[in-house]
Image (cartoon, rainbow, N blue to C red):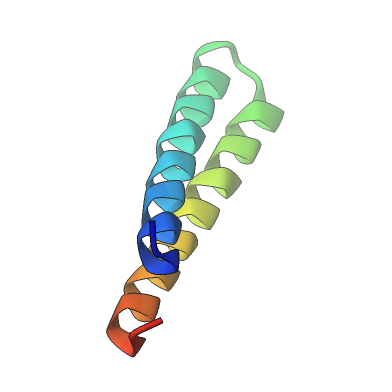
Length: 59
């Protein structure tokens, strides 16, 4: 698997797990878990975009 595809897949994974943590934090009333989930979701989006940029650049 090339580097750009790996970043896109991992980014999607982190985005999904972050969303789950965020929702779980809301359900169990845990602001800490909610924030961790939100941060992971954003990091996943960034990693996914990095993979797109690498693909365009040919890396």
